[in-house]
Length: 358
Image 1 (tube, rainbow, N blue to C red):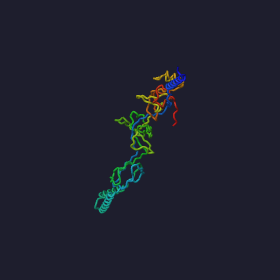
Image 2: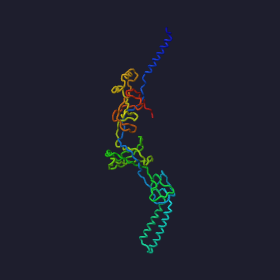
Image 3: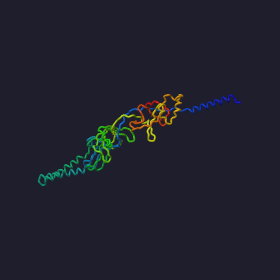
Image 4: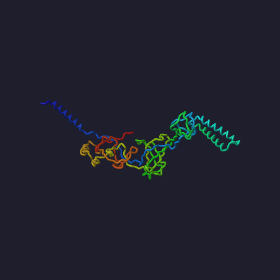
């Protein structure tokens, strides 16, 4: 005969094991998600291209006279004012030529007065003298306008020739982009339309300009229409030669939208997890175990107004300001999950949490 105390201990242990098994078989709590309602938002129909910015005013500086550089008073990146001294030249050779020209002119002037030479010869030497003196006046090279000094191609000691370009002045306060727009958009282009500058590979807006001119001709080879857009650049953030994405905004309209975080893609199809009632789930159960879920609601394990993740195919447009326009699949004011999407399955009950304060 078993000892009564041992029997009680065995029964207690068995009850404990059974309790543990029941706990192990209990369903995990529904996953927690954050959700937002679909809403109308402004979207723009635009034409995206890649363009290179050009300074509206770029001046190449060339030597007006030749000589050896004694002083170079500028370097790349310097801001200069109109009339500012840039280069000082040693013009010993030019001075010698000027002195010779002066001597020749004075001699022929004397000869002309005595009738020993013609007026034509005198005029020729006068012209040579004036030209030589003019070259001497350019021994100091000055800036014709204000701007930022570009690449300086000479150094102290170099001999510079008359007409040789030694740097450029760039005025970056306004830049221009040459945008080629497909000719099919020709009748929808207009002066003053917004043009956006966007960083390559990202959606970060860098600057906003406007259409300044539209070429009346279509490029026969590319079937493109040249549009010039101007961008104010008072802070100097944009640079001449910078290559950026440009978007000519043709039209703005309101469309139903969802956040970028709400959309997943599978095999090229976009989906969202719409949050719906049990009755909505029954209309499209998929692989969801409706019988088990209904028992859970009746037993009080799930609230009567429980929400379920309904995987819904949607048709989306181009992402803009972290929002997707939705043309098919959703209606206004429906809720969609924006977090924990990787752990959701169609028909899964969820707990909606308020969004975290930013």
